[in-house]
Image (cartoon, rainbow, N blue to C red; front, side):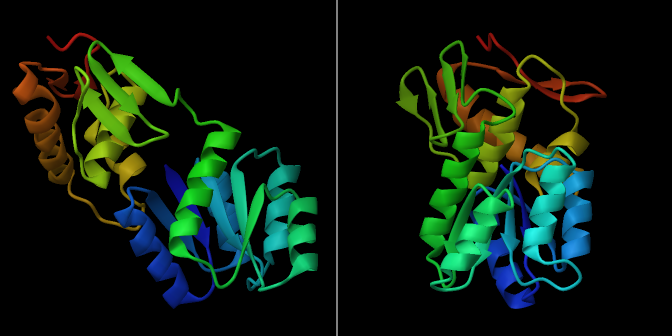
Length: 225
């Protein structure tokens, strides 16, 4: 899942970015209203985590402008503690959900995933390719009914390939989707994660679903036997 964090408190923004990345999210960060609005309209995100008190353009105005230009991205707004009026205005301006500060990180992650499920993802939540099952909502992978443990990043790579099953997906596309845009990631990083996937979801089961497409990238085959 790709998330945009719009938060002017840099320590908070960095903590959110690191925490959400560890959970397998792809995270971009903006520190003011205008840049947050620009990023949200320039790239595709599943959810925008939007603070209210932002320099240049507050969270309400960012939210209302996104809705005015036709964006249906999920918006979770961060409000002040016990801020009933903040919460009401957040919903009135088009936010899908809100969370009051201070908040539990565990609850935040759960709310983000719940919001992504409610607004619908860009692809099916559960992809079945032969005996391989990739459950995007539950973040579970299984092969022949056997659970296959994956790291959050490995699952994110597999999930992206599963959403594009049968298609050739370039390393650059995978980097853009799974790693945040502020990271100068080496394409070899993708190779490392793809190799790990092959060791976990293919080799033990005598499959070869994760295929290399010469000059194009990788493809998750529907029939990996």
